[in-house]
Length: 268
Image 1 (cartoon, rainbow, N blue to C red):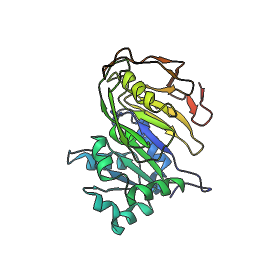
Image 2: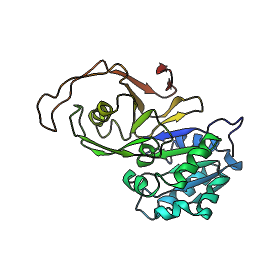
Image 3: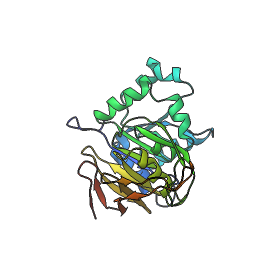
Image 4: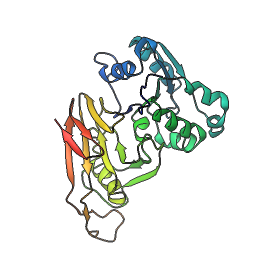
């Protein structure tokens, strides 16, 4: 495992549709974090129902210089309790959750012995990344659906428990491309103690062991801080009524900008 000094490994949230061919900077950086030719990455394609997803990422990571890449297809919750399954992660340097449907990840992997093991290994230096659905799954509370739009409305977003690597944020992916600002705000209206991270396509937040992330890729990460939030009454009693939200703090962070999740402070 590449982590040193008992530091937590990186947690990498990718907004989906990362550039895989011409400028694969996000995936290349992940491979380098995991040790390059000396690194071992385990790909979990469980979110996807396409049979080639795992093989596609295996080829990509090998082409980008990874030493060894294995695929671990979790098909049932019982798989997550098997000793032979857990052992495949014990000496990994990185784990990568592919895109697909985050509800499958929640239903099959969290909470299970595998989920607990991954959290423990990350604390000891294992790097864990997820793209699209895989990114949403990284946090303790996970968005599993909702309508697009810029206006936050009551009942427009659906949440469940995620993996739990990040207890202080909630992540939404394909953020600007699918117009998800409103649904992230709606999620935060129910959980104002959390930070909202809206991650664009071909963009990633590389969250380091000291809870500071740097932005990589061609888009931006939108950070929504609701620590001073004042939530107004609904405009009507309808479940789809607009929400009034006062004193939001919003940061738009492009490549090489950084953000301290603990201090809630941005640097550009």
